[in-house]
Image 1 (tube, protein in one colour):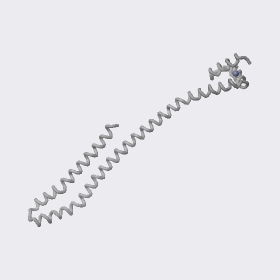
Image 2: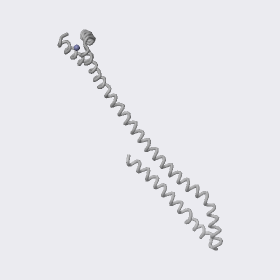
Image 3: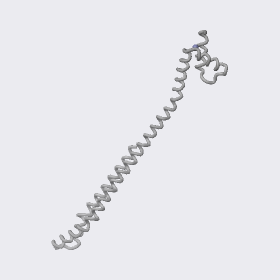
Image 4: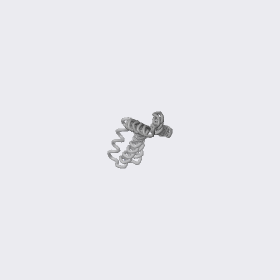
Length: 157
Ligand SMILES: [Zn+2]
């Protein structure tokens, strides 16, 4: 076997696929006999395989990055929803406590007004300031805070 045959074999290996049948047959025959060229062919095929798998790897990286972004966005949405839920629950709590305590406070103020000998208008006004105004302020503050937090979440995206 001449040195020339190995060179020819490695040249054909480098050309890769698309060889004429006659050359392919000659190359296969040479690879059967020659271990050095067989190793060379295996190494070359390994490189080709690696190159072929590269775009695929890039694709899966892209897919993973996209998935992470989607998950990140979903988390953002969930956080915003949780904040809104918190605000809603706070408002509900204020409303519920108001509903439960209004009749009691109303009677308390009526009783105090009667004992103090003031007119109905006076104790009713006192009741308004003592109870309804703070409740309104708390509700407005909670709503403002909720929308403020939600806006922050949208701005930093
Ligand atoms: Zn050879």
